[in-house]
Image (tube, rainbow, N blue to C red):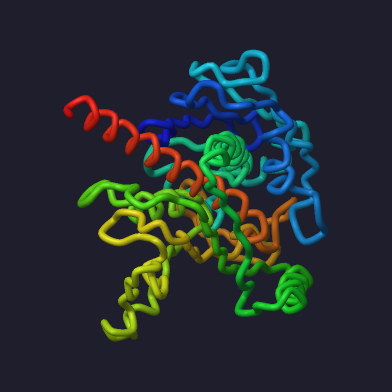
Amino acid sequence: MNTFGRSFCVTTFGESHGPAVGAVIDGCPPGIPLAEGDIQPFLDRRRPGASDLTSPRQEPDRVAILSGTFEGRTTGAPIALVVQNSDARPGSYEELREVFRPGHADFTWQAKYGMRDHRGGGRSSGRETVARVAAGAVAARCLAPRGISIAGRVREVHGASSPEGMEAEIRKAMAAGNSVGGVVEVTARGCPPGLGDPVFGKLDALIAMAMMGIGAVKGVEIGAGFAAAGMTGSEMNDPITPVGFGSNNAGGVLGGISTGQEIVVRMAVKPTPSIRREQETVDVRGRGRTISIAGRHDPCIALRVVPVAEAMLALVILDCLLEQEKYRAFQVVQE
C-alpha cells in the first residue's frame, strides 16, 4: 500500500535515486492558507547534509505545490507535492545489484515481487519519507487553527540521554564504521477528547501503525508503554478529578479514544543497516558473500526520524478529527 488515511488520504510516490519523490493529498479541507514556504521548514529539518552527524548526501529538498491551491489557499481539490532528487548517484549501487544487504528490505522485496530496485533500496529507502514530511506539514497547517501542535525529540542514542553523550555515541560509531539506534518521542498537545473509534479504529492502534510504517522503527509505546507491565493497577490508572486527570500513564488515549491530554508516543529506531564493517550475506543465487557498504549513510537514523514521526502523528490526528466531524455532522442531521 502506498496510501495512508481515510478522510485525509496521502499517496506517496518516487524512489531514492529516481527523478523525484512526492505525495498526493486528497481530502484536505478548503480555505487553509498554504504555500511552499509553509512546508519547506519541515523538510529542512529532515533533509540530509545539514550536519556532519547525518548523511552527506546534498539534497536541497525544495518542495513544489503542483495543484490544489488557489491564491494561497487550499481549494479542496487534490494537492500534489513534488521534491526533485538533485544528488542521486545510482551508479554507486551497481556492485549491490545482485547482493542482498543485511538489515535492508532487499531480500524481502525480491521474495515478494521477484525483482527490486538496488539503487539505495528504491521505495524502501528512507528517502521516501520526504513525501511523508511534506504531507505532514500540510496536516500541521490544518491542525494549527484548532490549537493542536506536535513536537518531537530524540530521547536517547545507544543508551545515552544527554546531548553530549548522544553525540559521543554517534561519533564513536562513525569512527568504527558502524551505526547506532535511538529512542524518539513525539507529543501532540491540544488534541480534543473523543478522537478515535472503539475496537478496530482505536486511535492508539492507528498511531502505532503509522509509526511502525516508518522503515527504521522496530517498536512503539504510548504513555507508560512497556513500563505498564511492571506496574499495579493503582499505579497505572490515571485519577480523574473535577479539574482533570491527575497523571497521564495512558498517554492521552483510553479505550482507543483521546482523553484530551497530551498524546505521548515513543519509538525504538534501529541502527542504520548500511555500515562499513564487513557483514555476511548472500547474492541472488544464494551464494555466500561478504560485503562492506560504502557511500553516504546516516550513522544514527534517529536524528532525522523526528520530523517524520511528527508528520505521521499529524496525519493520524487530522484524519481522526475529520472522521469525527463526519460523525458529529451525521448526529446533527439525525436530530
